[in-house]
Length: 175
Image (cartoon, rainbow, N blue to C red; front, side, top):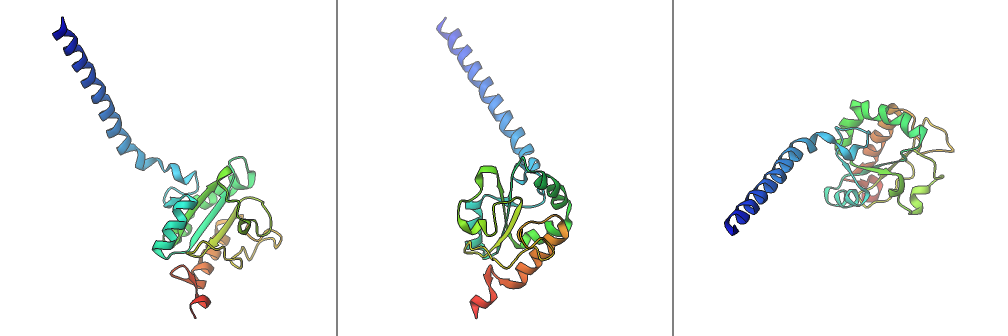
């Protein structure tokens, strides 16, 4: 009787272990394809949380680009597919630490409220985490400087950020 119970336990343990191992194998194969972190903003982009982004910007000496959006926002929903479809944004993103801020993750720091709390907002930060107040949507509404409605205006600001910063630091700061 004791031998039968031990055999049943061993069989049950082996079966459970096999199921767990199978799940881990399937998850490790499928998870790289899911791009959960993109939240629809571009699966080809290496997105970071704000904390991860601050750390990576410091160590990599790359500027940071931060997209602040809300799941319920109509303007965010309209911009998201344009952003995600842009090959130029995806290519330029390799020169930035890309930060994806959604809903309640928005930092409370006043530097992220430059001209209001509207959404979506896109900020460019140096590698020390400071918003570059002059890198704005030049073709947009002056009352909403960090609002972008199309991919081309974002590409223009990304290029402007790269022109104004070397290794994530403002050029004039180095002089």
